[in-house]
Length: 211
Ligand code: O7E
Image 1 (tube, rainbow, N blue to C red):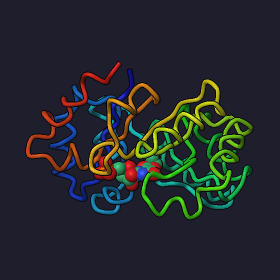
Image 2 (image 1 turned 180 degrees about the vertical axis):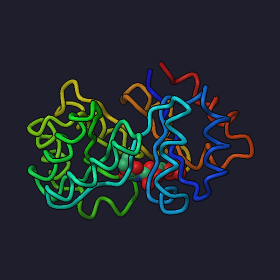
Image 3 (image 1 turned 180 degrees about the horizontal axis):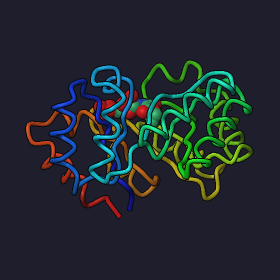
């Protein structure tokens, strides 16, 4: 039904590699963000990519177009196959990420609405819908939408056509995989897997929802 994306938010290289190796058969991609890269260095991306699992760079890129290009080019040179960008800097900034991604044969996802309670302060009143329109206009590959609000995933799905939805918030944030899996292209799960005593067994809990 959906891909399982492991959000590998540990900060030590050895832990990251141990968990990734243990879960390699049971996840479809690994999302790496600031916690791991700041803790272990960007070289962790190459180590993880060598396991043969697609890597998503969660740097929520949000700068002027030139800087976005510089960031994304480094991301793809490091071994990632997708990058996540913020929409609020505007269409030219998103286009810079999309062009870098596509030049490198990768993908670019844009945050449409976040999963935590406070997200509704700014991701409200038509903003996620406007971001979805921007995603279509810029040729981005998909959006990030909240597993904590399945009704919002359904609403945003209608606006993005065939583009993909990756959805964080299953597990520790309370999102229900049975409800979310049929709605999205990838469920992003972090603490419920990497924080478990047996991460591989925790990842296999989601096996019934994987395509
Ligand atoms: O709650 P967890 O432990 O399952 O981790 C969820 C991960 O998804 C974590 O890295 C967090 O930073 C990220 N995330 C959200 O939880 N909510 C969002 O709205 C957006 C993200 C995110 O990763 O954005 C880009 C995909």
